[in-house]
Length: 177
Image (cartoon, rainbow, N blue to C red):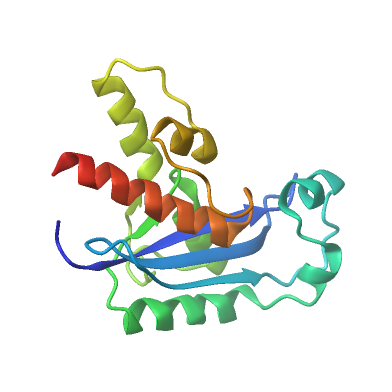
């Protein structure tokens, strides 16, 4: 396995607006498996957070009222990405988070930090299940259990989801060696 760093990205959204309210990131080294850096950012919004989302994510109204502007958080991600010399494309569980971030920032695919593509660990997991003639599960926690792993942290916390996405992706890559 090549020795390089990858940035795993996850977001939490309010409902029904789909407004980004939390961005989580984990930078990991694919060869060593070490998590080099991780961060969690609440995104500033005056929007009322739905009670369902508050229960699911643990994100409180005051977290987003005192959150950071999305453009500022993007700058933090860019600095972390460059400092850690990450592979260009972000790693996600499912395909939408990277593109949702680009759209929310109003950036085109050419100038966006992560480019026009992302690495989707969920698709790799589903493909793994197909190859083994196994029933696939799409949730990150259930997929980790199926892989003999334990979810670390709180589900639906963007930083913990980003970290666990890196961990399951790395394990799947190790199976391919």
